[in-house]
Amino acid sequence: MARRPLPRILSSGSAQLARSREIARTAADSATDVLHPLITITRGLRQLAATAARKWAATPKDRRGPALFLIVGCGLVVVLIPYGPLVALISVMAAAAWKGRVRTPVRTGPDEAETGRLQALYEALVPYFSVAEDPAPLFAHGGEWSKAFSGYEFDGNGRLTRLSVKYPAYFTDGESESRARIEKLLHAKSGRGREYLFSWDEEGNQLVMSVLPALPTSIAAQRFVTVPGETVLGFTDADAVQRTVPVTEGEETRDAPPVVWRTGPRSTEPHLLVVGEPGSGATTLLRSIALQALQHGDVLIIEGSGTGEYACLTGRTGVLALECGLAGALAALEWAAHETERRLIAANRARQAGHPVPEDTKRPLWILLDRPSILGHLAAADGDTDPQQLLQVPLRHGRAAHVTVVVAEQFDSLDALTEAVRTHTRARVVLGPATLEQVESVLGVEPHTTPTTEVPSGRGYARLGTGSVLRLQVPATPDPYDETTSEAHRQAVLDLLPERLERVEAAAPDPVPAEG
Image (cartoon, rainbow, N blue to C red; front, side, top):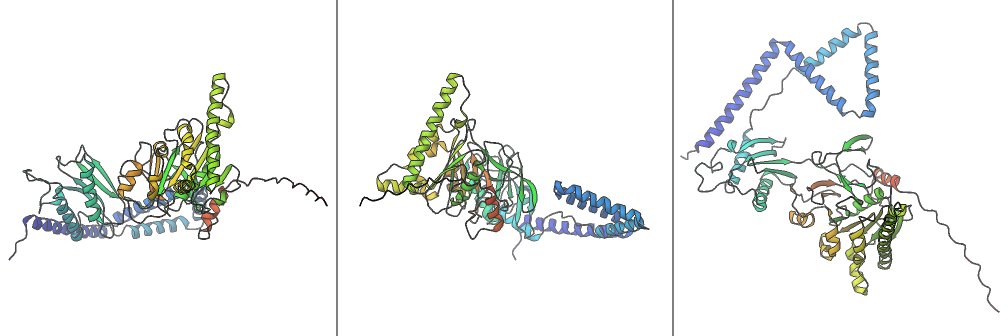
């Protein structure tokens, strides 16, 4: 007859004892409720007050005034009618008695299925957190998982949502390879398809794994509360940034944590590189940047794919040019290089003469280049100049001249980017499904979360300079001419478009009569 290991017997006995205590506590609470109805009513009043406080906190600020007026009006009606206060008091007491009649049992430990998951996870970590020379190993086959897991939480489906792991001091947590092995194991054992955050405390030898909620995709393009020189790339987790901006979702307004990119002469990340697969939302991000840039500056758009994704901006105020062909792109970028030089020379001469810098040199100029590798291949086939070569002057001197360059490219064409683009685009964004290696190749470091294989359009990561990697969700900014776009998102983009330019066509000269 096979004998069960002693630790497993102790663990099972502890779980049964905890369940027995929980049943006894529930029975005692029920007896207390029968003997003391006042306790039940008091508990119900406390729960009703907490519910009212939560609903009041969730009410938008612009609706609190009418709601308070309605409450006061109802109170006056109750006071004025005969026996109104008495009926209201009886109704509140009855609702409180019904609300507090059953006390929610407090769980004192995991159930049998959850205990099995924790034990299996503990056994899987033994080869990574133990060595043969350790006289008292924290992780050992058949050991007690409660000594290593100081905290845990499960969702309604019995899957882990949070886990605190204490590991030995000799574990090489300073090496990225060692941490990656542990994160990969925990990700696989805790359930795929979710995004996990791993927080390593090297000083306390503690690892906290938590499941991150999905970022909302319902925020559409709109006028964000920013100052000139600030661009909202998207939105991230509330604890990742120290700022919020009011946003409108449908008919409600709430505060959301944005990823703000600052440009201009004082910016340390004056240019941006966006990388993603087809359908990842890179064009959506560039369209969102263009709509925000047109509030205070001019925009020059070069679309290498030629699919007409920016057709809604054609002929709008502030849009200097929208080029899809190679010849037009070369001419527009050559003008942008000369304009950058002109601004630098004009500003330098004004400073030397002691005069203010001319206003035309301070108006922001944005150069949006989508898929430059396609134009580069066409230029190589025709023997022309690669359009990226004309970006060297705006990239090197654009910060001082109020010129900002945004480049969007796909993963399979990153090798086609020039050294100037790679060096001067210190703000980076990765969108769409990507591996940790792909994210690290663009951002320079791996994210602290685990990328998922299926993500909505506009979901990814952002890193501004040497800052931390942030999760990102781009605001919905679709092409308003796309028939598959929802009416709400289409109208949101149309409301942000500048007015069309009034074109004055020159009168055609009268034809010269032919000599007969």
